[in-house]
Image (cartoon, rainbow, N blue to C red):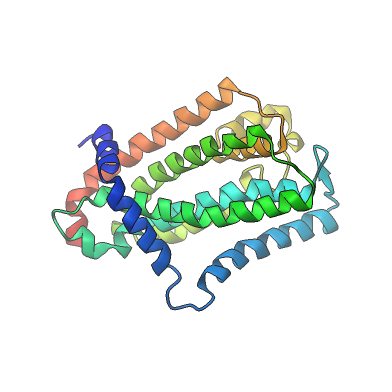
Length: 263
């Protein structure tokens, strides 16, 4: 089964994926009376912590003429989706091991299920973002529709990474701890908390190699205006992402025959 077969199988199973994602979204908060509220409060507390430290302690008040708090929130929204999607999809095969053991079940759809479930949670944060935009007096822009494209970019990137890590974690349990460290470093290595202009020009190539830098910058440009098409950055993003997708799918297919035995 090649990459094209994996994609076709996910497309064919779209109805099942949606059903499982809705079920996953609901069960995610079962057993906790304030389950969904906690899911929202945790990232919000992180937003306010960063806002307090960078604006009041370090003196970041505006970036590009926009309030730092708003600029920060817009950058964090896609990161929250990405980090939640990648981390939960990594555990997809372990969480649904009872399905993996069924020989007739298409296990390759499970990472997609978890990513779609994370996207449902992300919708809530986008609603919160709209509230903040209204508070700061930022009106709707036609360019904001471009966030659909950047959500797709994030979805594909998270899918490629999770195809890799979800299969590896079955055999190497420490992958979960390693992923936590990667995401902790990632938020600081991506221009989310700091403007890219603060980095010397000669190091901008390093930022360009970070796929999420492309997404975060695109989000801000789409929502705050000034959206432009950068063919070089776009090419680098999709080239990097497709390499990740190809490697992830190859590793997944190599390990797939042994998943049920280990789980």
